[in-house]
Length: 141
Length: 101
Image (cartoon, helix red, strand yellow):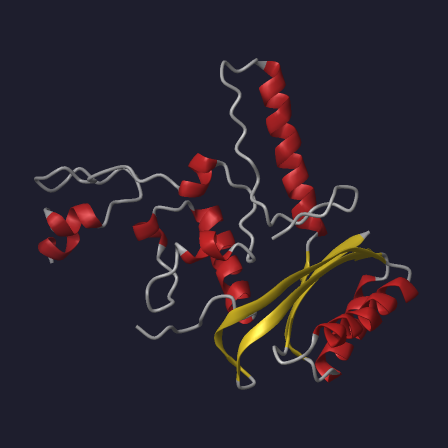
């Protein structure tokens, strides 16, 4: 089960309904190939660090999904994003290995904490933007 | 030749040894000034994510360049993850490639 996340930027001059209309076909591609959309996070308008296609601001959207047929789904999604005239930039990252590693570290740390009861149990909270595994609740940015 | 071999003592020698590695026993002054620890190891941050711009941007210089390990004190595996995250963030316009001063 491969977990991917795509962060893409939509042109800032596009109205709200069109933004949702741009995201819908992407979700359909994922579900059509048997995948599951984990979360759709809209960050809203943000100032870009550099000019992208003459725009200085953009509307960021984060789409996280898990699927069996990874490469075909991703290829199709990227093709659509490239063709679409509302999306100006996108970045696809595969995160299932990373999530597995984080889970392992967390469980190891919890086991170590159980072995010797610490006098002041201080567990630093994980940063808010950590991608969540599908079973857990969605987290805001 | 002999001088080139032996690292110059004083400020140059001390500045080069911030990583906490044991310095060679030469030079008149103390070899490393202070042991700098990796911020990620101390705070136990596992996930250096490209989306956390505030955390990432503290390791980026004014001009947008990545701060080297010997100055920031980050350990090697974390520095590699950090530079990966910075490059991803640059690609998606969260960080600049080259910033105006």
